[in-house]
Image (cartoon, rainbow, N blue to C red; front, side, top):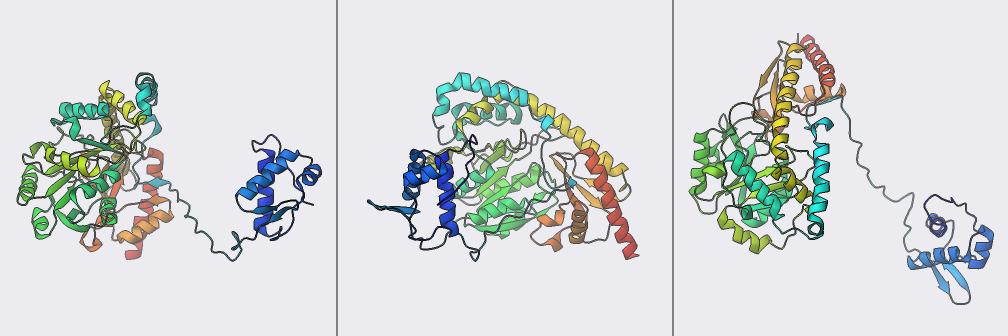
Length: 469
């Protein structure tokens, strides 16, 4: 007779528990194919449960095919063609646990105290009260009109960009927008990215099945000479603050790029301004989009850097002549950002909260950057380190005085709990990269962890010097 124990008050009904017990016995082989099960009344009496409990369990097992019934004879275990569980079955390979580091200079994160929780919660409550029924309606393909209006106003006021809200396409992160652009512009075109550059951008274009070219950089940014030497039709750049070199593209190079785009029909520049709001010296750099008179520039930006990485709201601005093509080819796609998040962000922007937040974050990040640089330059690495490209964005470069190869430096640092990203990691060919340059992403660094990490790096450099000597 089947004998099981049950947990009462655990949130799982008795029939569900009985169903699971019998199913487990069938899958494990304790109940064999064709074996007859006890009658409902007999099993109910033995387990001291109701007949209804047993009946519901049997019916669920029958519905899923684990048992079958024969009229006036009872219930029997089904024959399973293949064992669903076997010691010889191949094991599913589990993902390796994410390694934690004492100091992580690779990942940009945001401290909890930096996020405006109180204001954001108020905006969410206000959105529920004011938008109510609109929250139940899917937003238009290009995003909620209220948010697009707020973005257009913000760009006009702070970036000097005149944009019709209809030109704006809202999406859940830059990755979504990149794939949409490939579908809009065509997979038959050749796309180009910066070398060195943010690795994921090239990976996304390659995953979309397009031809990809990696174009070298010089002191002014992406080389237009090298771009002309390629067969690229579309080029993805970050002219206001390149990652990871920190280069700001000068006006002369921007004009060269615009000329390149105008030399042939169907050429486009994708201007990615991922963290342009955090410039600490001088005025914001004018956008290529604002200087483009012939509609060859597509502008892209995100709120992930300015508010929080979890705010997966990005947008692109299409030249007017591409709007009709977008509506015809891609207008059937639903917007990938929920109405609730869009209306909340719109309220946050239109009430001036976003401007206040950006100003506050710019000051905090400037202070954070200065504190990080001070700890590095006045700590155990003093005299063996040079700081570069620290005037904009959420990262800077740190050149170390060492002969240790970049790969070994990373390995030894990781073994001591320090995660490094070297500038050479972002080059297609590491041999072309300057050595011993660390890319420091500082937004989430804690001072006490940084001090300990710098001590570990100093010990590594001392050890390598002794070995060399």
